[in-house]
Image (tube, rainbow, N blue to C red; front, side, top):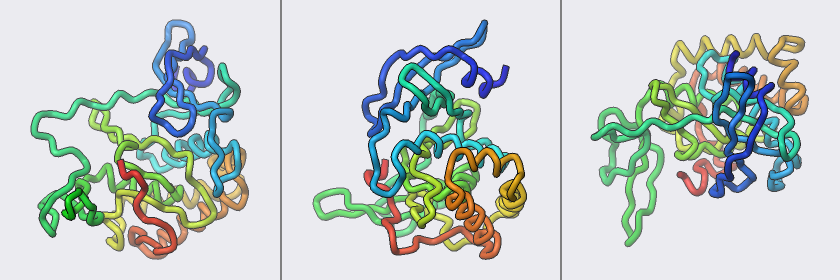
Amino acid sequence: MTSVELLTRGELTVLGQIREASNAVLYCSVAYGDESAECVYKPVAGERPLWDFPDGTLAQREVAAYEVSQATGWDLVPPTVLRDGPYGEGMVQLWVEPAEPAEGDPGLLALVEDEEPGDGWKPVALAEVGEGRTALLVHADDARLRRLAVLDAVINNGDRKGGHLLPAPDGRLYGIDHGVTFNVDDKLRTLLWGWAGEGLTPEAVGALKGLAEALRPLQPLAVRLASLITEAELEATRSRVTALLASGVHPTPSGEWPAIPWPPV
């Protein structure tokens, strides 16, 4: 049984609540026969209304982000489904336990006091660190992060924080919390601006060309997305893919919307 099948067909049991989240996030187990796993359940009923997104649509956007991630072939979002649960319809996502950082591992994000990042790091922005001092916020020059930056540009992610990056024990990197995505207006807000204006990798171009084909009307991905986001949002997604392929570069901040999420972590 695949993870998606287990999440879809299994019985959900609520084990606790993740209280740090702004919306209701429940830690659960899901079981079907001899198969079981831990997961996160975000019921639509627990979503806090947002001024710039229609009420009761965040769960669908999380699932749409997973669908697009799968279409790239990059497997950047944990398996995610929309289903009924103890508190009504909601998003259910496989729980990913982050890997314990190895001794001496600098991680994916850092603050450095130098004006220029060292080897292996990309600059993001200057940040105030107290007592009138500033430091340079940097992220790792990591191929996994770069793929995630491309995905975020496609889905128009308005909230890519450091805490939404989950390095898994098997070496994969997952992104989570994709409720504020797919808006028709430019909402891209992220910590992954290090490649802004740089050329897309051949791998990214290939993934985007595949997405462009998969997003054509009546294609299976387009049909699935049409049940999760509006037609205008689906068309805007197609337009973002087309624009990325036409420019051949990672997007830069528009200046019309805060480029860095707050709080950043």
